[in-house]
Image 1 (tube, rainbow, N blue to C red):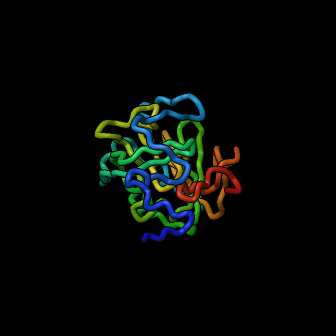
Image 2: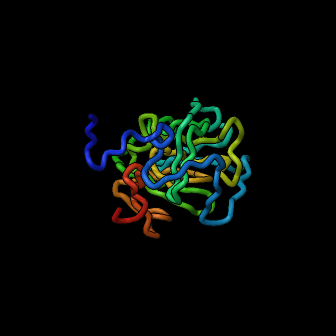
Image 3: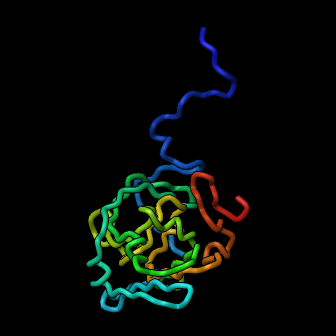
Length: 199
C-alpha cells in the first residue's frame, strides 16, 4: 500500500524544472523595447567604463572586438513571463572590461545608446556571470535585440541585460535605472519572482 502525503504531486516533468515560477517557454525571440531602436555606426561606437572618481577607460568597436571573448549558452527570462532556453551568445566578460580598474564601488549603472539605464550590483557582473555580447546564434546581434552590443546578465530578468549598451558607471551607492524608477524591482531575480518593487 502506497502512502502519499497530502499536497504531494511528484516530481515535475524535466521540461518544467528549468523555468522560474510564473514563466512560460517560448521558441521565438520576442522584441520588447522602451523606445525606438537606435542605429549605431560601428565607426562611432565606443564603450566606456567610468569609476566613482571619474576615471574612464574607453574602447572603439575594433578594440572591443579584439578582446578575448567567450561563447556563452544560457537560459534567459523576461519579466513579461517568457523564457527562452539554451540561447547562444558570444561576448567579452565584464571582468575583462574592468581589469586594471581601481574601484571601491558596489554598484553599477549600465548606460545605453538611446538613454536607457539599469542598475546592477557589481558582484552580479563578475565571476563569469555577465558579458558584453556582440553575437547571437553565430551572427551579429540584430539592432532590435540590442546590437551591436548588449549587456548579458542571464541570471536576472532580461531588462537588466541592457540593449545597445555603451558603458558601465561604477557607483558607491545604488541608484535606480529606467524601469526601476517606474516600479520594477531593483534586483530582478526570476527565481524569486522579483518583478516589481516589494516582490
